[in-house]
Length: 337
Image (cartoon, rainbow, N blue to C red; front, side, top):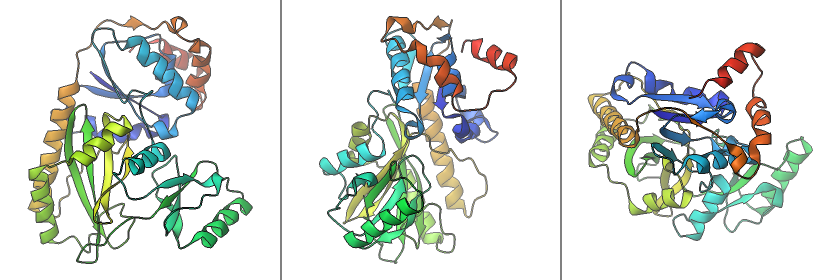
């Protein structure tokens, strides 16, 4: 059994794993909220995957780490994305720049940074919605934009200033692609092209047969560079999707998402598109099977043996979502995994 743990409002990303397209290929999986995970009296053996770190409160990360430490050496348990090792957003981007894997840097907006290169853009640290506004040309324009945000009541805390780094291809389009890691295995996931530098979805006006055939060739070869593998290692991420592109003539790692949406659509624009999606699904299923572990009897959780986090468990278990009928909520929490 593989258990994914995510923030309550983002459990939808795993629905496809139990759907009619992917379900028959997958090992037994389920997705639960951190609220339920923290309130459990014990865990059953199996593989547990922590996700959604950028959306978690630091106290939640610490408690998740305490629980992982309690179970890590017990037989039958495996944990991916160990909370004490994972780097997200600002910490990851700074590390990638320091190790020469990226050409660009990022800064906390609240420090009113002076970036080394322009243009830059502003984004939230805790979501995947993309930039806030357009590109900012120079230092004066950046100071003006930050002041405008503050005057409009937007706190700078939680915002990042990121240096722009993206190259157009010879055909004038921008291209992004993705790589998944699960355990020790990697696979290419997809290719996006579009006119805008912030490519979030394919621009179907430009996806022609030549692009789809190139996509299929890339998927068949499934070459994941040493630099991308090193980026995952620096991030401490065992399960996730790296979003990549080209800038300054080399591959740039824009982010590594620990809770990417898993797609299972069956609408294809060509035979090459269908084949490339089938290749990815089979590899993704094989990667999950490789980290799967059988279940077993529940092992009680005794946090009192650690650093005293047990007093935070009920608060963290109920802080994020409205409670249903009290008796139903209590009954749900008392069920072991």
